[in-house]
Length: 90
Image (cartoon, rainbow, N blue to C red; front, side, top):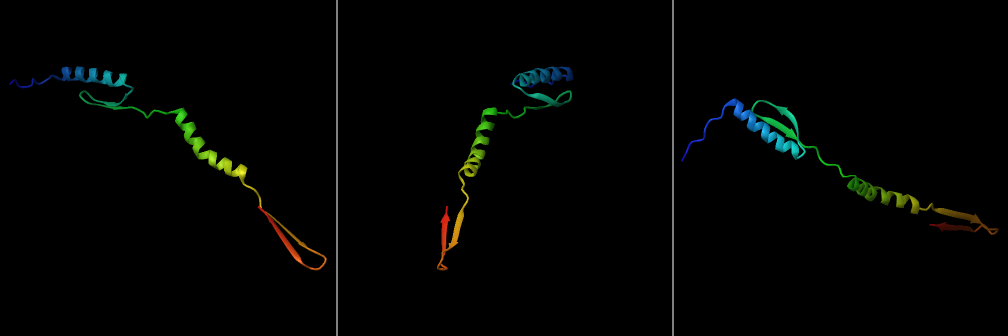
């Protein structure tokens, strides 16, 4: 069994740069980098279709409620005998 060879700083930089290139090709970008370390980040994907669908699912019931709601009316009259009549219209 052979022992792992200690790499020079230049060799480590080269290995890091090769690895960074692979991650950048996957959509990541460098946030912070030193000679031997790198912090990369990939932003969340935005789906316009999913956004529209979720917005419609949230807004559609509210719009339907506004369109389908009706005002209630109460008609009250008093006839010539003094009887009070109430008719409620839903």
